[in-house]
Amino acid sequence: MIGHVDADCFYASAERVRYPSLRGIPVGVLGNQGACVIAKSYEMKAAGVKTGQPIWEAVKVCPHGVYVKRDFRWYEVLSRSMLDVVREFSPTVEYYSIDEMFFDATGVDPWSMQKTILTRVGVPVSIGVAASRTLAKLASDARKPFGCSVSAVGDFDELPVTEITGIALRSSIKLSAHDIRTVGDFRQADRQLVNRLLTKVGEGLWWELNGTPITPITISRPMHKRIARGGSVGRTTDDRDRLMGWVARNVERLVEAMFWHRYVTRKLSLWLSFKTGGWSGQTALISSTGASEMLLPAAKELFVIGWRGQPVTHMHIVADELQVIGSQQRSLFEPVKPELDELKRTVNEKLGRFTVRSAETLAINDIYGDEAYGYDICDVYGKSCF
Amino acid sequence: MMGIALARCEVPDELVDRLSNRVTHRGDGEPEVQFLYRQRPRVLPVWHHGRLVIMPWAGWCPLEELESRAWSERRPKQADIPATYCVDRGIWYQVKEGIRGVIVQNQVYPITQPASHYYRVMTRSERMPLLIGESF
Image (cartoon, rainbow over all chains, first blue to last red):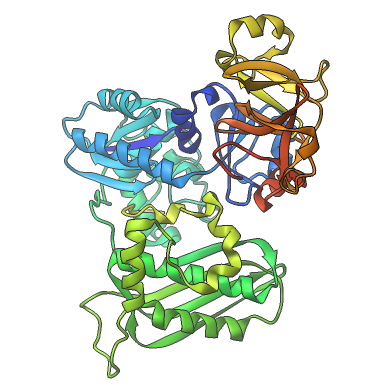
């Protein structure tokens, strides 16, 4: 049997752990711009606020709601405490996302696990136990909040097919053309038809919904296809120095992530989003590298090619064709040693992240002074999903 | 910043007796005491000589004016205004401890500063309070 732990409105619950005055009231967690509600309590959901909704719309439907600034460092502390508890109960645990874990439920008392997480971490969770991951996740979702159940094949047959993780709108349109609208329709459909419509991935879901586990619990994260760092550039800007500051910042964060995962890359891409439209370009590197001495000049070169003075809203830097350090193909050229990165790492490990950083980031000093930008969801390592 | 709310449990009982018309509930949460600029009398809670007292809220003190010593003749004294939540243009947001302020002639003025990008987006306000132990 497989178990799935899913924290109930995790970010809001995490804020309530350190600020008990937030209990029982509508709470909205804002993104790093302060513009959108990225998570909400059940009270705010009941008032009609949607995730992703701008705050000025949310406040109209929920005027008494209280808004808080996101803090991924704190959420990670609680997430890892939850993980510790789950590991006490089960030897095989997958850290799926910051608020979700799968575990081998053989011999595990899920009600006891749920109670222990609440008393020790302070976060309410829902737990589903079933024969496969897909069923376990449906079980935990269906019993929220603070539900706990052991479910069987067929227990979720009445739910819409879009409740299945992995079946989004486009897949549901294909399925509805064959009168497959519910979990039960999907489970009882012809397996080969499902394969034709949704490929092998869809067929895997079919097996899982019929009680045959296809996707195992993965204790260590599978290798990435690519790693990206970036996002919004704060307020939209056409200031060249600020944008170069963002290039340097995103490269430094990418280098951090690649070092943590022990990756090097052969290909670097830059994605820019403008107020209307966007641009992307990529460059091949002369040898596999994880060194900012090579990656920053390459990213800056891409920026010079792609930016024509337009106001930029978002920027991403992507490392493709990743290889694990030591397994990469040898180059004809002498590889660049990441001496500068090693120096930065040594200092920053002792004195704090970004204590030493590229001088080009001075143009965005305000971003470094803002705690909300200090730590992002992607800085929480070890998760098998997002 | 057009008002604050302070958790009821943070306010001494003898003060709550005088402020009972300001005690309110937000959903199923703990009761809180609200101090809004539009309420009469216009007052704020202030830590003064180690005690929580209620003082008239006379207006705001821009940080720039305080730093340029424009308020020196008024002999402002630093004061902390405890708060659980603040409200600005209808947006209630959570604060860790409260707001810095100054006391002049037994009246309190919360200190304000130019709004950060985040605060401006969140509240659409050009000024923000000087918060204790945190930045927005």
